[in-house]
Image 1: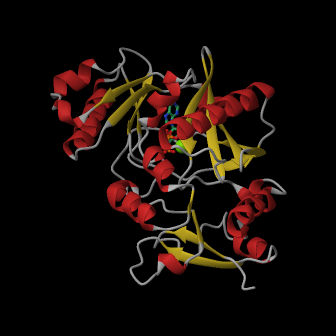
Image 2: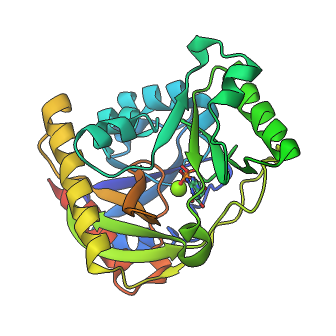
Image 3: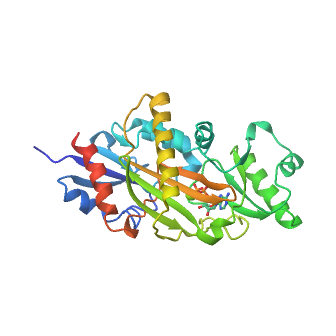
Amino acid sequence: MSKPIVTLATCAALPQLSEDDAPLPDALAERGIEPRVAVWDDPSVDWSAAGTVVVRSVSDYAPRREEFVRWAESVPRICNHADVIRWNTDKHYLLELEKRGMPTIPTVWLEPERNLSKHQVHTRFPAGGDFVVKPAVSSGAHDTGRYTAVDAVSRQQAIGHAMDLLSQGRAVMVQRYLESVDQRGETALIFMNGLVSHAVEKEAMLHGPFRGEVDAPEEVAHARQATEAEWRLGEEARKAIHSYIKERMGRDEQLTFCRIDVVEGEDGLHVMEVGLVDASLYLSTTPGAVDNFADAIAVRAFW
Ligand SMILES: Nc1ncnc2c1ncn2[C@@H]1O[C@H](COP(=O)(O)OP(=O)(O)O)[C@@H](O)[C@H]1O
Ligand SMILES: [Mg+2]
C-alpha cells in the first residue's frame, strides 16, 4: 500500500512553512505519511493529487479572501473544511458566537455599504480611553491600530484609518482597547481534533496607531499554564463553534485544529478571536504540541 500524502499549504513568502510549523513534515513522516509542502496560489500544483491538504501559513489571504476561499473550495480534501474557512476568514463570525452566549469583545461594526461620513465614523468611536480599529478580514494584526479617544491627533488618525479601510470596501471593527492585554497578554488555547493540546501567552502587539506599514507587528508567544476559567471558556467556545458548524454546515466532526484566544476584560474573560485557518499553533512553545498536531492530521490522512 502506498503511503497517504499530506500537503501542508503555505504562502509564497514562507515556501518552507513558518519556523513554528517546520518540524511538522518529519513528525508526519514518522507516522507513515508522505509529507509535502505547497504554496496555495502556485498554479503548478495539482491539488487533486495532494492528498489531505492542511492549511498552514497562508497569512497573505486577507487582501484576496474570495480567491483564497474559492481555492479552498476547489481542494478535494482540505482541513479545516472549506465551509469553515469561508466562515472563519471574516470576523463577523464573532456575532454568531455572541448569539450563542459567548462573551465576545463589545464591537461597533462599520460596514462599507453604509457609506458613512467622517463625522458618522467619529461619532461611533468611544468618548474616552484607548480603542482599536481593525478590519473584519485580517490576520496577524495587519492593518490594525490603537488610538486614544481624547487625543485630537490620534482620533483624526483613527478616522483616517477607518475611512481608508471602508473606501477599500472593507468592514471595520471598533473595540475598546483591553488594558489587560498590556499586563498579561492574550491566552491562546489550542485544541487538536477537539482535544486540549496546549496554551500560550501572546504579548501585546499594539503600541500605537497604524502607520500603514507593510509588515505586521511581530508576535511574541511563550508557553503558559492557562487558568481553569480560561480552559472552561475555551471549551464552551469550542462547543459553540462545533454546534454552529453542525447546524449550519451539516458537518458533525471535530476540527483538525482550533485556536481560541481569550483576554481578560473588566467584567471577566472575553473571546478575542477564533483561528481555524492560518492560525499559528505555537508548536515550538510546548513539548508534545508537534506530536498532538501530527496525530490529529494522521487521523485525517488514514481515513
Ligand atoms: N480590543 C483589543 N484590546 C487589546 N488588544 C487588541 C484588541 N483588539 C486587537 N488587539 C491586539 O491586536 C492583535 C490583533 O488583533 P486580532 O483581533 O487578534 O486580529 P488578528 O490576529 O486576526 O489580526 C491582538 O493580538 C492584540 O494584541
Ligand atoms: Mg489575533
